[in-house]
Length: 604
Image (tube, rainbow, N blue to C red):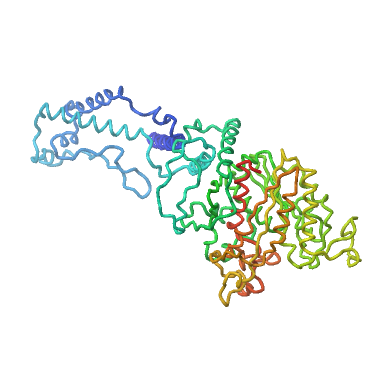
Protein backbone atom coordinates (compact mmCIF):
# COMPACT_ATOMS: atom_id res chain seq x y z
CA UNK A 1 0.00 0.00 0.00
CA UNK A 2 2.84 2.35 0.77
CA UNK A 3 4.46 1.77 -2.61
CA UNK A 4 1.15 2.36 -4.33
CA UNK A 5 0.72 5.62 -2.44
CA UNK A 6 4.19 6.71 -3.41
CA UNK A 7 3.41 5.89 -7.03
CA UNK A 8 0.25 7.95 -6.90
CA UNK A 9 2.16 10.81 -5.32
CA UNK A 10 4.72 10.70 -8.08
CA UNK A 11 1.96 10.77 -10.68
CA UNK A 12 0.43 13.78 -8.96
CA UNK A 13 3.81 15.52 -8.98
CA UNK A 14 4.16 14.86 -12.66
CA UNK A 15 0.65 16.29 -13.21
CA UNK A 16 1.60 19.44 -11.32
CA UNK A 17 4.73 19.76 -13.41
CA UNK A 18 2.68 19.48 -16.63
CA UNK A 19 0.26 22.16 -15.44
CA UNK A 20 3.18 24.41 -14.49
CA UNK A 21 4.72 23.84 -17.89
CA UNK A 22 1.49 24.94 -19.63
CA UNK A 23 1.36 27.96 -17.31
CA UNK A 24 4.89 28.86 -18.34
CA UNK A 25 3.97 28.59 -22.02
CA UNK A 26 1.20 31.14 -21.49
CA UNK A 27 3.66 33.47 -19.72
CA UNK A 28 6.90 33.16 -21.67
CA UNK A 29 8.35 36.38 -20.30
CA UNK A 30 7.83 35.43 -16.65
CA UNK A 31 10.30 33.21 -14.75
CA UNK A 32 9.24 29.61 -15.05
CA UNK A 33 7.48 28.30 -11.97
CA UNK A 34 9.01 24.90 -12.56
CA UNK A 35 12.44 26.47 -12.96
CA UNK A 36 12.08 28.50 -9.76
CA UNK A 37 11.25 25.38 -7.81
CA UNK A 38 13.28 22.65 -9.37
CA UNK A 39 15.97 23.92 -11.77
CA UNK A 40 19.36 22.86 -10.41
CA UNK A 41 21.82 25.69 -9.97
CA UNK A 42 25.58 25.59 -10.27
CA UNK A 43 25.89 25.54 -6.48
CA UNK A 44 24.11 22.20 -6.43
CA UNK A 45 26.62 20.53 -8.74
CA UNK A 46 28.99 19.36 -5.93
CA UNK A 47 26.11 17.57 -4.25
CA UNK A 48 25.55 15.48 -7.37
CA UNK A 49 29.22 14.46 -7.43
CA UNK A 50 29.13 13.70 -3.71
CA UNK A 51 26.07 11.54 -4.22
CA UNK A 52 27.80 9.77 -7.08
CA UNK A 53 30.93 9.20 -5.00
CA UNK A 54 29.01 7.53 -2.19
CA UNK A 55 27.17 5.37 -4.68
CA UNK A 56 30.40 4.39 -6.39
CA UNK A 57 32.13 3.51 -3.12
CA UNK A 58 29.14 1.46 -2.14
CA UNK A 59 29.21 -0.46 -5.41
CA UNK A 60 32.97 -0.97 -5.51
CA UNK A 61 33.63 -1.86 -1.89
CA UNK A 62 32.90 -5.41 -0.76
CA UNK A 63 30.08 -5.93 1.66
CA UNK A 64 30.70 -7.49 5.05
CA UNK A 65 30.51 -11.22 4.91
CA UNK A 66 27.38 -11.40 6.98
CA UNK A 67 25.59 -9.17 4.39
CA UNK A 68 26.94 -10.88 1.29
CA UNK A 69 24.30 -13.04 -0.26
CA UNK A 70 24.88 -15.45 -3.05
CA UNK A 71 23.36 -12.85 -5.39
CA UNK A 72 26.04 -10.27 -4.47
CA UNK A 73 28.80 -12.81 -4.78
CA UNK A 74 27.68 -13.92 -8.23
CA UNK A 75 27.19 -10.29 -9.33
CA UNK A 76 30.73 -9.35 -8.23
CA UNK A 77 32.28 -12.27 -10.09
CA UNK A 78 30.31 -11.50 -13.26
CA UNK A 79 27.92 -14.45 -13.21
CA UNK A 80 24.88 -12.16 -13.28
CA UNK A 81 24.23 -8.92 -15.08
CA UNK A 82 23.65 -5.90 -12.81
CA UNK A 83 20.01 -5.56 -11.84
CA UNK A 84 18.09 -2.98 -13.84
CA UNK A 85 17.17 0.30 -12.14
CA UNK A 86 14.01 0.19 -10.07
CA UNK A 87 12.12 2.60 -12.36
CA UNK A 88 12.72 0.27 -15.34
CA UNK A 89 11.28 -2.83 -13.65
CA UNK A 90 7.86 -3.94 -14.95
CA UNK A 91 5.03 -2.56 -12.84
CA UNK A 92 2.76 -5.11 -11.29
CA UNK A 93 -0.75 -4.71 -12.68
CA UNK A 94 -3.34 -6.10 -15.01
CA UNK A 95 -1.97 -7.82 -18.05
CA UNK A 96 1.68 -7.39 -16.97
CA UNK A 97 4.34 -9.78 -15.67
CA UNK A 98 5.04 -10.01 -12.00
CA UNK A 99 8.14 -8.28 -10.70
CA UNK A 100 11.19 -10.40 -10.71
CA UNK A 101 11.73 -12.03 -7.37
CA UNK A 102 15.13 -12.57 -5.91
CA UNK A 103 16.37 -16.02 -6.42
CA UNK A 104 16.23 -18.13 -3.36
CA UNK A 105 19.49 -19.81 -2.37
CA UNK A 106 19.61 -23.43 -3.45
CA UNK A 107 18.80 -25.98 -0.83
CA UNK A 108 21.57 -27.50 1.21
CA UNK A 109 21.09 -30.78 -0.60
CA UNK A 110 22.15 -29.25 -3.90
CA UNK A 111 25.52 -30.27 -5.31
CA UNK A 112 28.50 -28.25 -4.12
CA UNK A 113 29.46 -27.45 -7.72
CA UNK A 114 26.30 -25.35 -8.06
CA UNK A 115 27.66 -22.90 -5.50
CA UNK A 116 31.00 -22.39 -7.28
CA UNK A 117 31.49 -19.06 -9.06
CA UNK A 118 31.47 -18.99 -12.84
CA UNK A 119 34.88 -19.49 -14.38
CA UNK A 120 34.13 -16.86 -17.06
CA UNK A 121 35.48 -13.99 -14.97
CA UNK A 122 37.67 -13.72 -11.92
CA UNK A 123 37.47 -10.82 -9.55
CA UNK A 124 40.37 -8.49 -9.58
CA UNK A 125 41.21 -5.11 -8.12
CA UNK A 126 40.10 -2.09 -10.12
CA UNK A 127 42.71 0.46 -11.03
CA UNK A 128 42.53 3.95 -9.59
CA UNK A 129 41.98 5.44 -13.07
CA UNK A 130 39.09 3.06 -13.76
CA UNK A 131 37.44 3.90 -10.45
CA UNK A 132 37.80 7.63 -11.11
CA UNK A 133 36.38 7.28 -14.62
CA UNK A 134 33.42 5.29 -13.27
CA UNK A 135 32.71 8.01 -10.71
CA UNK A 136 32.74 10.74 -13.37
CA UNK A 137 30.42 8.79 -15.67
CA UNK A 138 27.94 8.04 -12.88
CA UNK A 139 28.01 11.65 -11.65
CA UNK A 140 27.42 13.02 -15.15
CA UNK A 141 24.54 10.60 -15.72
CA UNK A 142 22.91 11.55 -12.41
CA UNK A 143 23.22 15.26 -13.10
CA UNK A 144 21.76 15.02 -16.62
CA UNK A 145 19.00 12.68 -15.48
CA UNK A 146 17.99 14.90 -12.54
CA UNK A 147 18.18 18.02 -14.68
CA UNK A 148 15.97 16.49 -17.37
CA UNK A 149 13.41 15.24 -14.86
CA UNK A 150 13.20 18.58 -13.10
CA UNK A 151 12.67 20.71 -16.17
CA UNK A 152 9.14 20.83 -17.64
CA UNK A 153 8.68 18.66 -20.72
CA UNK A 154 8.56 20.22 -24.16
CA UNK A 155 5.30 18.54 -25.05
CA UNK A 156 2.71 17.10 -22.75
CA UNK A 157 0.96 13.89 -23.80
CA UNK A 158 -2.23 15.16 -22.18
CA UNK A 159 -2.45 18.96 -22.74
CA UNK A 160 -4.85 21.18 -20.84
CA UNK A 161 -7.18 22.22 -23.67
CA UNK A 162 -8.68 25.04 -21.64
CA UNK A 163 -5.28 26.63 -21.12
CA UNK A 164 -4.37 26.18 -24.76
CA UNK A 165 -7.63 27.83 -25.81
CA UNK A 166 -6.98 30.75 -23.49
CA UNK A 167 -3.50 31.07 -24.98
CA UNK A 168 -4.95 31.23 -28.47
CA UNK A 169 -7.48 33.88 -27.42
CA UNK A 170 -4.74 35.87 -25.71
CA UNK A 171 -2.58 35.77 -28.83
CA UNK A 172 -5.41 36.97 -31.09
CA UNK A 173 -6.46 39.64 -28.61
CA UNK A 174 -2.90 40.92 -28.26
CA UNK A 175 -2.60 41.51 -32.00
CA UNK A 176 -5.29 44.19 -31.93
CA UNK A 177 -4.50 45.58 -28.49
CA UNK A 178 -0.81 46.21 -29.27
CA UNK A 179 -1.04 48.76 -32.04
CA UNK A 180 2.09 50.49 -30.78
CA UNK A 181 4.20 47.36 -31.19
CA UNK A 182 6.81 47.63 -33.96
CA UNK A 183 5.67 46.15 -37.23
CA UNK A 184 7.69 43.38 -38.90
CA UNK A 185 9.32 44.12 -42.25
CA UNK A 186 6.89 43.64 -45.16
CA UNK A 187 7.12 40.59 -47.32
CA UNK A 188 9.03 41.10 -50.53
CA UNK A 189 7.15 38.59 -52.62
CA UNK A 190 6.63 40.24 -55.99
CA UNK A 191 4.15 37.68 -57.23
CA UNK A 192 0.72 39.15 -56.54
CA UNK A 193 -1.39 36.94 -58.75
CA UNK A 194 -4.91 36.22 -57.60
CA UNK A 195 -4.07 32.57 -57.01
CA UNK A 196 -1.89 33.38 -54.02
CA UNK A 197 -3.71 36.38 -52.61
CA UNK A 198 -4.45 34.40 -49.47
CA UNK A 199 -0.82 35.08 -48.52
CA UNK A 200 -1.37 38.85 -48.25
CA UNK A 201 -0.72 40.27 -44.81
CA UNK A 202 -3.41 42.14 -42.92
CA UNK A 203 -2.09 45.64 -42.29
CA UNK A 204 -1.83 45.27 -38.52
CA UNK A 205 1.44 45.65 -36.60
CA UNK A 206 2.44 42.42 -34.91
CA UNK A 207 5.16 41.55 -32.45
CA UNK A 208 6.55 38.31 -31.13
CA UNK A 209 6.77 39.68 -27.60
CA UNK A 210 3.30 41.13 -27.15
CA UNK A 211 2.94 39.70 -23.64
CA UNK A 212 6.06 41.54 -22.55
CA UNK A 213 4.84 44.83 -23.94
CA UNK A 214 1.40 44.43 -22.38
CA UNK A 215 2.87 43.56 -19.02
CA UNK A 216 1.94 39.89 -18.99
CA UNK A 217 -1.70 38.86 -18.67
CA UNK A 218 -3.00 42.09 -17.23
CA UNK A 219 -6.73 42.54 -17.79
CA UNK A 220 -7.40 45.72 -15.82
CA UNK A 221 -10.16 47.85 -17.28
CA UNK A 222 -7.98 50.98 -17.40
CA UNK A 223 -5.25 49.15 -19.34
CA UNK A 224 -7.80 47.79 -21.80
CA UNK A 225 -9.25 51.26 -22.38
CA UNK A 226 -5.78 52.71 -23.02
CA UNK A 227 -5.03 49.97 -25.51
CA UNK A 228 -8.33 50.54 -27.30
CA UNK A 229 -7.64 54.26 -27.63
CA UNK A 230 -4.32 53.45 -29.28
CA UNK A 231 -6.06 50.86 -31.42
CA UNK A 232 -8.66 53.39 -32.57
CA UNK A 233 -6.03 55.88 -33.68
CA UNK A 234 -4.24 53.21 -35.69
CA UNK A 235 -7.48 51.94 -37.28
CA UNK A 236 -8.56 55.48 -38.19
CA UNK A 237 -5.21 55.97 -39.88
CA UNK A 238 -5.58 52.68 -41.77
CA UNK A 239 -9.18 53.39 -42.91
CA UNK A 240 -8.77 57.10 -43.71
CA UNK A 241 -9.18 57.57 -47.44
CA UNK A 242 -9.85 53.85 -47.90
CA UNK A 243 -12.61 52.70 -50.24
CA UNK A 244 -13.77 49.66 -48.29
CA UNK A 245 -16.46 48.74 -50.81
CA UNK A 246 -14.26 48.83 -53.92
CA UNK A 247 -12.06 45.82 -54.37
CA UNK A 248 -12.18 42.17 -55.30
CA UNK A 249 -13.08 38.78 -53.89
CA UNK A 250 -10.02 36.66 -53.08
CA UNK A 251 -10.22 32.91 -52.54
CA UNK A 252 -8.56 31.94 -49.26
CA UNK A 253 -7.53 28.38 -50.04
CA UNK A 254 -5.58 28.05 -46.80
CA UNK A 255 -8.56 29.15 -44.70
CA UNK A 256 -6.49 31.69 -42.77
CA UNK A 257 -8.99 34.55 -42.90
CA UNK A 258 -12.15 32.90 -44.20
CA UNK A 259 -14.35 31.53 -42.86
CA UNK A 260 -14.25 33.37 -39.54
CA UNK A 261 -16.01 30.45 -37.80
CA UNK A 262 -17.31 26.98 -38.62
CA UNK A 263 -20.95 26.06 -39.08
CA UNK A 264 -20.60 23.30 -36.48
CA UNK A 265 -19.10 25.72 -33.94
CA UNK A 266 -22.15 27.98 -33.66
CA UNK A 267 -25.16 26.45 -31.98
CA UNK A 268 -27.27 29.58 -32.52
CA UNK A 269 -27.69 29.21 -36.28
CA UNK A 270 -31.18 28.42 -37.55
CA UNK A 271 -31.83 25.70 -40.08
CA UNK A 272 -32.65 28.32 -42.68
CA UNK A 273 -28.94 29.16 -43.15
CA UNK A 274 -27.03 25.95 -42.28
CA UNK A 275 -26.46 24.93 -45.90
CA UNK A 276 -23.80 22.28 -45.27
CA UNK A 277 -25.92 20.58 -42.64
CA UNK A 278 -28.86 20.73 -45.04
CA UNK A 279 -27.06 18.83 -47.78
CA UNK A 280 -24.80 21.24 -49.65
CA UNK A 281 -21.62 19.40 -50.63
CA UNK A 282 -19.16 22.18 -51.49
CA UNK A 283 -17.94 24.71 -48.92
CA UNK A 284 -16.05 26.98 -51.32
CA UNK A 285 -18.59 29.77 -50.75
CA UNK A 286 -17.20 30.10 -47.21
CA UNK A 287 -13.61 30.73 -48.35
CA UNK A 288 -13.96 34.00 -50.23
CA UNK A 289 -12.79 37.14 -48.45
CA UNK A 290 -13.12 40.74 -49.53
CA UNK A 291 -9.93 42.64 -50.37
CA UNK A 292 -10.48 46.42 -50.57
CA UNK A 293 -8.39 48.49 -52.96
CA UNK A 294 -5.48 50.29 -51.37
CA UNK A 295 -6.08 49.13 -47.81
CA UNK A 296 -6.84 46.10 -45.68
CA UNK A 297 -9.70 45.17 -43.41
CA UNK A 298 -8.51 44.75 -39.82
CA UNK A 299 -8.48 41.18 -38.56
CA UNK A 300 -11.77 40.36 -36.89
CA UNK A 301 -11.31 39.93 -33.14
CA UNK A 302 -14.46 38.93 -31.27
CA UNK A 303 -12.99 39.92 -27.91
CA UNK A 304 -12.10 43.39 -29.17
CA UNK A 305 -15.65 43.87 -30.42
CA UNK A 306 -17.13 42.59 -27.17
CA UNK A 307 -15.02 45.11 -25.28
CA UNK A 308 -16.55 47.84 -27.42
CA UNK A 309 -19.98 46.39 -26.60
CA UNK A 310 -19.36 46.07 -22.86
CA UNK A 311 -22.43 47.39 -20.99
CA UNK A 312 -23.99 48.29 -24.35
CA UNK A 313 -26.67 47.12 -26.78
CA UNK A 314 -26.39 46.43 -30.49
CA UNK A 315 -29.62 46.02 -32.43
CA UNK A 316 -30.33 45.01 -36.03
CA UNK A 317 -33.65 46.43 -37.22
CA UNK A 318 -35.34 45.43 -40.44
CA UNK A 319 -36.31 42.42 -42.54
CA UNK A 320 -35.12 38.83 -42.85
CA UNK A 321 -31.84 39.92 -44.49
CA UNK A 322 -30.98 41.89 -41.37
CA UNK A 323 -31.96 38.84 -39.35
CA UNK A 324 -29.55 36.89 -41.56
CA UNK A 325 -26.82 39.40 -40.67
CA UNK A 326 -27.77 39.33 -36.99
CA UNK A 327 -27.29 35.55 -36.89
CA UNK A 328 -23.87 36.07 -38.43
CA UNK A 329 -22.89 38.61 -35.78
CA UNK A 330 -24.05 36.30 -32.99
CA UNK A 331 -21.83 33.53 -34.34
CA UNK A 332 -18.89 35.89 -34.75
CA UNK A 333 -18.90 37.01 -31.11
CA UNK A 334 -20.12 33.88 -29.33
CA UNK A 335 -16.86 32.01 -29.92
CA UNK A 336 -15.11 34.32 -27.45
CA UNK A 337 -17.67 33.75 -24.68
CA UNK A 338 -17.36 30.76 -22.32
CA UNK A 339 -20.08 28.15 -22.17
CA UNK A 340 -22.78 29.15 -19.70
CA UNK A 341 -22.06 32.87 -20.13
CA UNK A 342 -24.22 33.35 -23.24
CA UNK A 343 -27.95 32.99 -23.85
CA UNK A 344 -30.38 33.56 -26.71
CA UNK A 345 -33.96 34.57 -26.01
CA UNK A 346 -36.36 34.58 -28.94
CA UNK A 347 -39.73 36.21 -29.57
CA UNK A 348 -39.54 38.87 -26.87
CA UNK A 349 -41.98 41.79 -27.01
CA UNK A 350 -44.79 39.91 -28.76
CA UNK A 351 -42.29 38.05 -30.88
CA UNK A 352 -40.66 41.03 -32.60
CA UNK A 353 -37.40 40.94 -30.63
CA UNK A 354 -34.65 38.31 -30.36
CA UNK A 355 -31.88 38.92 -27.81
CA UNK A 356 -28.45 37.33 -27.60
CA UNK A 357 -26.78 38.18 -24.30
CA UNK A 358 -23.09 38.00 -23.37
CA UNK A 359 -23.38 37.94 -19.59
CA UNK A 360 -19.71 38.48 -18.79
CA UNK A 361 -19.73 41.72 -20.80
CA UNK A 362 -23.30 42.75 -19.95
CA UNK A 363 -23.76 43.18 -23.71
CA UNK A 364 -26.58 42.26 -26.06
CA UNK A 365 -26.82 41.69 -29.80
CA UNK A 366 -30.49 41.97 -30.76
CA UNK A 367 -32.77 41.72 -33.77
CA UNK A 368 -36.04 43.62 -34.11
CA UNK A 369 -38.49 42.69 -36.85
CA UNK A 370 -39.71 45.74 -38.84
CA UNK A 371 -39.45 44.95 -42.58
CA UNK A 372 -40.56 48.45 -43.67
CA UNK A 373 -39.24 50.31 -40.59
CA UNK A 374 -42.65 51.99 -40.39
CA UNK A 375 -45.84 50.15 -39.46
CA UNK A 376 -47.30 47.74 -41.99
CA UNK A 377 -49.58 44.74 -42.24
CA UNK A 378 -46.42 42.57 -42.38
CA UNK A 379 -45.27 43.37 -38.85
CA UNK A 380 -46.17 39.99 -37.39
CA UNK A 381 -42.75 38.34 -36.94
CA UNK A 382 -44.10 34.86 -37.61
CA UNK A 383 -47.11 35.29 -39.91
CA UNK A 384 -46.09 38.01 -42.32
CA UNK A 385 -46.36 36.46 -45.78
CA UNK A 386 -49.06 38.88 -46.91
CA UNK A 387 -49.72 39.19 -50.63
CA UNK A 388 -51.13 42.75 -50.53
CA UNK A 389 -48.66 44.67 -48.43
CA UNK A 390 -49.80 47.95 -46.97
CA UNK A 391 -47.65 50.51 -45.16
CA UNK A 392 -48.33 53.56 -43.01
CA UNK A 393 -45.39 55.72 -44.08
CA UNK A 394 -45.77 58.28 -41.29
CA UNK A 395 -46.26 55.79 -38.42
CA UNK A 396 -42.95 54.84 -36.81
CA UNK A 397 -43.45 55.53 -33.11
CA UNK A 398 -44.64 52.01 -32.24
CA UNK A 399 -41.49 50.38 -33.58
CA UNK A 400 -39.15 53.19 -32.55
CA UNK A 401 -40.12 52.84 -28.91
CA UNK A 402 -38.03 49.65 -28.91
CA UNK A 403 -34.93 51.36 -30.34
CA UNK A 404 -34.38 53.82 -27.51
CA UNK A 405 -31.32 53.29 -25.35
CA UNK A 406 -29.51 51.22 -27.99
CA UNK A 407 -25.87 52.13 -28.57
CA UNK A 408 -25.37 50.60 -32.05
CA UNK A 409 -28.37 50.61 -34.40
CA UNK A 410 -28.12 48.77 -37.74
CA UNK A 411 -31.11 49.40 -40.05
CA UNK A 412 -32.19 47.96 -43.38
CA UNK A 413 -35.29 47.76 -45.55
CA UNK A 414 -35.35 46.55 -49.15
CA UNK A 415 -36.44 43.05 -50.10
CA UNK A 416 -40.07 43.53 -49.04
CA UNK A 417 -40.43 46.41 -51.50
CA UNK A 418 -39.81 44.28 -54.59
CA UNK A 419 -43.13 42.45 -55.01
CA UNK A 420 -44.66 45.20 -57.15
CA UNK A 421 -43.66 48.45 -58.80
CA UNK A 422 -46.32 50.18 -56.71
CA UNK A 423 -47.07 49.80 -53.04
CA UNK A 424 -50.22 50.46 -51.06
CA UNK A 425 -50.00 53.36 -48.61
CA UNK A 426 -52.64 54.13 -45.98
CA UNK A 427 -54.38 57.46 -46.44
CA UNK A 428 -55.44 57.84 -42.82
CA UNK A 429 -52.95 58.80 -40.11
CA UNK A 430 -55.11 57.20 -37.44
CA UNK A 431 -54.64 53.74 -35.98
CA UNK A 432 -53.53 51.70 -38.99
CA UNK A 433 -54.70 48.17 -39.64
CA UNK A 434 -57.30 48.28 -36.88
CA UNK A 435 -59.56 46.09 -38.96
CA UNK A 436 -59.68 44.21 -42.21
CA UNK A 437 -62.70 45.85 -43.81
CA UNK A 438 -62.72 48.79 -46.21
CA UNK A 439 -59.02 48.67 -47.06
CA UNK A 440 -59.61 49.40 -50.72
CA UNK A 441 -60.93 52.86 -49.83
CA UNK A 442 -58.23 53.59 -47.21
CA UNK A 443 -55.02 53.26 -49.20
CA UNK A 444 -53.49 54.67 -52.35
CA UNK A 445 -51.11 53.07 -54.84
CA UNK A 446 -47.78 54.89 -54.84
CA UNK A 447 -44.68 54.31 -56.96
CA UNK A 448 -42.15 52.16 -55.14
CA UNK A 449 -39.30 54.67 -55.13
CA UNK A 450 -41.52 57.55 -53.97
CA UNK A 451 -42.95 55.51 -51.10
CA UNK A 452 -39.44 54.34 -50.20
CA UNK A 453 -38.23 57.95 -50.00
CA UNK A 454 -41.13 58.98 -47.79
CA UNK A 455 -40.55 56.07 -45.42
CA UNK A 456 -36.85 56.90 -45.11
CA UNK A 457 -37.67 60.57 -44.52
CA UNK A 458 -39.95 59.52 -41.66
CA UNK A 459 -37.19 57.32 -40.27
CA UNK A 460 -34.50 60.02 -40.71
CA UNK A 461 -36.64 62.59 -38.92
CA UNK A 462 -36.99 60.24 -35.94
CA UNK A 463 -33.23 59.58 -35.88
CA UNK A 464 -32.38 63.29 -36.00
CA UNK A 465 -34.83 64.09 -33.22
CA UNK A 466 -34.42 61.13 -30.89
CA UNK A 467 -30.85 59.88 -31.24
CA UNK A 468 -27.96 61.33 -29.25
CA UNK A 469 -24.96 61.07 -31.61
CA UNK A 470 -22.59 61.10 -28.63
CA UNK A 471 -24.12 57.89 -27.29
CA UNK A 472 -25.52 56.02 -30.30
CA UNK A 473 -23.91 55.08 -33.61
CA UNK A 474 -26.30 54.47 -36.50
CA UNK A 475 -25.67 52.34 -39.60
CA UNK A 476 -27.85 51.81 -42.66
CA UNK A 477 -27.23 48.68 -44.70
CA UNK A 478 -27.50 49.03 -48.46
CA UNK A 479 -29.53 46.63 -50.60
CA UNK A 480 -28.85 42.90 -50.43
CA UNK A 481 -29.23 41.63 -54.02
CA UNK A 482 -30.97 38.49 -55.23
CA UNK A 483 -29.92 36.19 -58.09
CA UNK A 484 -32.89 34.86 -60.05
CA UNK A 485 -31.68 35.52 -63.62
CA UNK A 486 -28.76 33.33 -64.76
CA UNK A 487 -28.73 35.07 -68.15
CA UNK A 488 -27.56 38.24 -66.37
CA UNK A 489 -24.20 36.65 -65.55
CA UNK A 490 -23.91 34.45 -68.63
CA UNK A 491 -25.26 31.29 -67.07
CA UNK A 492 -25.52 28.09 -69.06
CA UNK A 493 -28.66 27.23 -71.00
CA UNK A 494 -29.90 24.85 -68.33
CA UNK A 495 -29.14 27.12 -65.36
CA UNK A 496 -32.01 27.70 -62.95
CA UNK A 497 -31.82 30.75 -60.70
CA UNK A 498 -28.84 30.45 -58.32
CA UNK A 499 -29.05 26.66 -58.01
CA UNK A 500 -25.78 24.74 -58.37
CA UNK A 501 -23.71 27.95 -58.51
CA UNK A 502 -20.33 27.40 -56.83
CA UNK A 503 -18.26 30.42 -57.96
CA UNK A 504 -18.72 34.20 -57.76
CA UNK A 505 -19.34 36.23 -60.89
CA UNK A 506 -15.98 37.02 -62.49
CA UNK A 507 -16.98 38.38 -65.91
CA UNK A 508 -18.57 41.64 -64.81
CA UNK A 509 -18.26 44.27 -67.54
CA UNK A 510 -17.46 47.94 -67.09
CA UNK A 511 -21.07 48.77 -67.88
CA UNK A 512 -22.30 47.13 -64.69
CA UNK A 513 -24.18 43.99 -63.82
CA UNK A 514 -27.95 43.93 -64.28
CA UNK A 515 -29.29 41.15 -62.05
CA UNK A 516 -32.47 42.97 -61.02
CA UNK A 517 -31.26 45.23 -58.21
CA UNK A 518 -33.40 48.37 -57.91
CA UNK A 519 -30.64 50.97 -57.93
CA UNK A 520 -33.25 53.73 -57.65
CA UNK A 521 -33.82 52.72 -54.03
CA UNK A 522 -30.07 52.67 -53.51
CA UNK A 523 -29.87 56.26 -54.73
CA UNK A 524 -32.84 57.29 -52.59
CA UNK A 525 -31.18 55.90 -49.47
CA UNK A 526 -27.90 57.71 -50.13
CA UNK A 527 -29.74 60.97 -50.77
CA UNK A 528 -31.80 60.81 -47.58
CA UNK A 529 -28.73 59.99 -45.48
CA UNK A 530 -26.81 62.93 -46.96
CA UNK A 531 -29.67 65.25 -46.05
CA UNK A 532 -29.47 64.39 -42.35
CA UNK A 533 -27.91 67.24 -40.38
CA UNK A 534 -27.72 66.33 -36.72
CA UNK A 535 -26.87 62.61 -36.69
CA UNK A 536 -24.33 61.11 -39.04
CA UNK A 537 -25.46 57.72 -40.33
CA UNK A 538 -22.88 55.35 -41.81
CA UNK A 539 -24.05 53.92 -45.15
CA UNK A 540 -22.64 50.37 -45.44
CA UNK A 541 -22.60 49.96 -49.21
CA UNK A 542 -22.69 46.18 -49.65
CA UNK A 543 -24.77 46.06 -52.85
CA UNK A 544 -22.27 45.95 -55.71
CA UNK A 545 -19.83 43.59 -54.01
CA UNK A 546 -22.69 41.29 -52.99
CA UNK A 547 -24.04 41.17 -56.54
CA UNK A 548 -20.97 39.11 -57.46
CA UNK A 549 -21.82 36.35 -54.95
CA UNK A 550 -24.32 34.25 -56.84
CA UNK A 551 -22.71 31.20 -55.21
CA UNK A 552 -23.51 32.11 -51.60
CA UNK A 553 -27.31 31.80 -51.41
CA UNK A 554 -29.12 29.11 -49.46
CA UNK A 555 -30.72 27.90 -52.73
CA UNK A 556 -32.41 24.52 -52.09
CA UNK A 557 -30.52 23.85 -48.86
CA UNK A 558 -32.94 25.67 -46.61
CA UNK A 559 -36.45 25.78 -45.13
CA UNK A 560 -39.82 26.39 -46.68
CA UNK A 561 -42.66 27.30 -44.31
CA UNK A 562 -40.62 26.15 -41.33
CA UNK A 563 -39.66 22.74 -42.75
CA UNK A 564 -36.55 21.51 -44.52
CA UNK A 565 -37.01 20.93 -48.22
CA UNK A 566 -37.59 17.31 -49.13
CA UNK A 567 -35.36 15.60 -51.74
CA UNK A 568 -38.17 16.01 -54.25
CA UNK A 569 -38.38 19.74 -53.53
CA UNK A 570 -34.61 20.11 -53.72
CA UNK A 571 -34.75 18.57 -57.18
CA UNK A 572 -37.08 21.38 -58.27
CA UNK A 573 -35.01 24.58 -57.85
CA UNK A 574 -37.23 26.51 -60.26
CA UNK A 575 -39.93 26.41 -57.60
CA UNK A 576 -38.06 26.11 -54.33
CA UNK A 577 -34.59 27.70 -54.67
CA UNK A 578 -34.10 30.60 -52.23
CA UNK A 579 -31.82 33.09 -54.01
CA UNK A 580 -32.48 35.88 -51.50
CA UNK A 581 -31.01 34.69 -48.19
CA UNK A 582 -27.41 33.64 -47.59
CA UNK A 583 -25.67 30.60 -46.15
CA UNK A 584 -23.73 30.97 -42.91
CA UNK A 585 -20.81 31.11 -42.58
CA UNK A 586 -20.84 33.23 -45.68
CA UNK A 587 -21.38 36.65 -47.19
CA UNK A 588 -23.10 38.33 -44.18
CA UNK A 589 -19.89 37.73 -42.22
CA UNK A 590 -18.20 40.18 -44.60
CA UNK A 591 -20.95 42.73 -44.00
CA UNK A 592 -20.32 42.45 -40.28
CA UNK A 593 -16.60 42.75 -40.92
CA UNK A 594 -17.34 46.21 -42.33
CA UNK A 595 -19.34 47.07 -39.20
CA UNK A 596 -16.46 45.83 -37.08
CA UNK A 597 -13.97 48.02 -38.97
CA UNK A 598 -16.08 51.13 -38.35
CA UNK A 599 -16.92 50.33 -34.73
CA UNK A 600 -13.38 49.50 -33.67
CA UNK A 601 -12.01 52.50 -35.57
CA UNK A 602 -14.61 54.69 -33.90
CA UNK A 603 -15.33 56.17 -37.33
CA UNK A 604 -19.12 56.19 -37.15
